[in-house]
Length: 274
Image: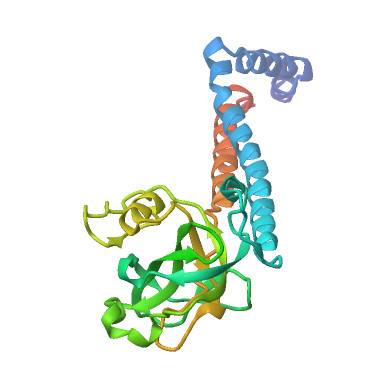
């Protein structure tokens, strides 16, 4: 009799129809998602879309960097007669002939010395830890009534005063090759330049041109312009901010984490205890 009762109890506890009913009921309760639950699903969807957008942005940025480097390595062209053409010529190398007006130098600093791996290439940081300034000098064209700004290059801090480097102050007419640069906005946390000071903290071409009495056009002289005792040319740094990979990882990680939390709360069935 006792064995019969145990057998009946075992069959009742292991009835597949009864267990299926329990699973169906509990599963149905787990999938009864409210409007608020569906609204929360927008979080992983949005972060996934942002990650995908950053993938496209990264591809665009890498393509832009490649195009700029190729543009900078092309043979130099003559400085354009129409100044409007310069708006599409940033990082293009141009050839110029004229004279410098050393009496109106201005400076950008502090800066570390850059060195070029090859002619026409972008600059790379030198192993030297010494800081200095970039010497910006008005340059008057020999064949046109135009004065622009030329970044002659880098000098150490103790050579900022022109009187300490007289042998480098070229007086004769010269021909040089340089890279067209556009003005830049003041970087975040960068201090403002002091009114009347000849030292600038960033490439504020408009204000530098006003102080030097030149057109608001800046050209970085290449390394071939370097003369003994003068600024070291070739200080063009071709870099673009590219943090898209970190953004991709951040957004996709958030998408995976938030979707798992949503799935765990709204879709995963609770365990059925037998």
